Every structure is written in structure tokens, then in C-alpha cells.
Image (tube, rainbow, N blue to C red; front, side, top):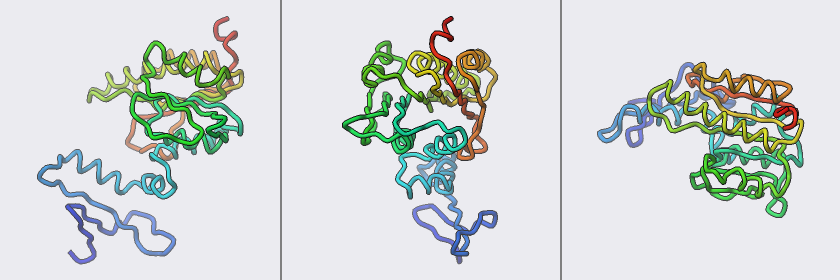
Amino acid sequence: MPGDLALGGVAAIPAMDEKRPSSGRRQLKVRVKTARRRKASSARWLERQLNDPYVARARAEGYRARSAFKLIELDEKFGLFRPGDRVVDLGAAPGGWCQVAAERVGTSDGDPHVVAIDYLEMEPLPGVVILRKDFLDDDAPEAIQQALGGHLADVVMSDMAAPTTGHRQTDHLRTMHLCEVAADFATSVLKPGGHFVTKVFQGGAERDLLTMLKRSFDKVHHVKPPASRKGSVELYLVARGFRGEDEVTG
């Protein structure tokens, strides 16, 4: 068709509602056709990826995932990282959050300041200690503490979510369990004044977690960063100013 680009069942047409790039030319919106072996849901996912400006930015700027920009936006809003901080990344694969943390705290293979854990394989990153292990394993907390080299953490962050079942409430409860375990771990390894960041899903089961965080941290924020897709039910909890384990248990 005139004005269209088509390659392998993917068609790009001018998007009237998209902002024009600096060159003044219209951006092309990619539409994905449902091929014989491609499900409609797969076509929708591919179309969303191809038209997502954060996906394009991640590719252009060398980040492993678009989620890197969520953490960048949270850091810009709340000042999570300082040079020299030690950071633990729970459920780290593919490594986008680790990349951001490594850039912002400064780290090296000789003196690593970022520890990442995930049961999925993850390509190495300079200055990042990667543990291929399920965070829910009994020995995972000890393995992380050993990787920290006897230091306490300044930031514990988690972008973990349980594998989805398709049942919204079940998925919410399973992910909230991960958040609660992550928060409990954070209070055992954070320095006083440290921060905790975790993804949650909207669904009403986070009350106990919020109560615990408000007891353990000076400030707790619910936030949806701009890089989080509008249709997603995800939110982020940012807990700042850890009061210290003695106050939590006291």
C-alpha cells in the first residue's frame, strides 16, 4: 500500500497521534498482522513492543530492558543512589536495574558494590556479583550476605513478580508474597538510613506490607513511574530512611 512499510507480516503506517521526531517527519507506528502460526495475543505483544518508545530507548542506550527507565525515574524522583552505595537487586534478570545501579553508585570487578540474584541465567556485568539462585531458597539470604563481603546494603530493590496464572487475584497474592519476603530480607541487611524499592500489583492485599514498611522506614511512597505502562496494574513501593533493625524488632 502507498505510504506503508511491510516486512514479514509487520506493517508500519504513519501514526497521527504520535509526536513528531525532531526532524519533523512523522513517526511510523508498527502494526503486526496475525500470521498463520502467530496467536493474536502474540501479535498484540509484538506490536506493543515495536511501538514502545522505552523499548527503543533501551536498545539505543544499551540497557537490557525497558524497566531500566522505571528505576532511573524513581532515582530521579527520590534520590535512591549515591556514589559508593552497596546495592542488592532481587530477581535481577536480565539486568536492566543492575546496569542503572552500577552506573549510579560506581562499581568495579575489583570492588563490586552491586549484588544480583535470579534463578534465570544472566549475562555478566562489570562490577556486579551475580548469584544464579532462587531468592526463595533457604540459603539465598546467606549467599547474598557473603557476596556483600560483610557490608550492609544501602539499597535493596526488587522488580520480582510471580509467573502469571491468568487469575488476577491469585497473581496478586503470589507477587505480594515475594514482596513481603523481599521486605523482610531488606530489614535484615540494610544500613540505617537505607532504602527499599519493590514492585507490587494493585489488588488490596498489601496492607500488612505497608504497615511493616511504615514501622521500619521514615517515609513510604506508592508511585507509578512514567515508564510503567498505563494499562499495567503494577505500582512501586519506595521506602526511604530505614530506622534500623533494632527499632524494627524492638
